[in-house]
Image (cartoon, rainbow, N blue to C red):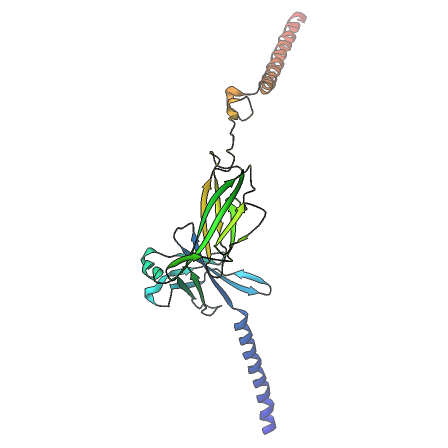
Amino acid sequence: MKLLKNKYWLPVLLLLAFTNKMIAQDSLAHELLLNISFYLPNDKIPYLKLSAKEKVERRFIPQKGISGSVYIGEENEINLLGQVNTNDKGEAIVYIPSSFKSIWDSSSTISFLVISEANKVFQSTKSEVQVTKARVEIDTVSTDGIKSVLAKVTSLNNGQWLPAKDVELKIAVRRSLGDLPVGDEETYTTDSTGTVTAEYKRDSLLGDTKGNLILVAKTEDHETYGNISVEKQVNWGVAPKFENLLDKRSLWATSSKTPFWLLGLAYSIIGGVWGTLIYLIYLLLRIRKLRKAAA
């Protein structure tokens, strides 16, 4: 009797163990990767960018529709910056309003916290980032015909703005398809004074109607300062020369500026059609005359 019971219990235990293992693996398979980044663009309103992804094998898949709450400092209603919901790229943006100025000014280092809501696939996930207040300044200098861009990074420490050493900066020219480095180097590292100098080697770039270009100095995903950028307009570009082709005879000009060869072609076609019709009428009249003469 006991052997019979053991025969039935053993498959049940194995099935339960296998089921628990599959559930555990399934729960581990869906791990939400939540990231939060700080941005301060050109001394404008700072904001946070959230990204939600899932790692499937060796790929990162953006997760749409992930809802969450973003806090400045600790998790409570007073520190709530806003509710977010990720878009098709798995990203969401929340700005830091002026109502949080007192919290922002209270310390040189600010922490941000994002907590995602649990759904059918992912459990609730937390992600936190700490940012030290910093700023980037940009200036230009021209010596012996050589143009250079100067950038300086300072960070707030005990109420004082001190030079930030060993900070990687990108110094570039703003273009429509992406920022173009001003020189041969992709990045520049600040010295003990928090300063870098980059020689400008992008002569003959097209600017606006007055030849103005926009220089950019920025940090990218810095582990301490986040993403900080500053811009400066300089007259180092080439003003485009626009030629009014509508005043010349061309295919895209007005009717009064039609090319002579096109006019000749059109009139020759019209003349050929009318000439053919007139010749046919002449033949018909002649045939009619011959019939009368034969009668």
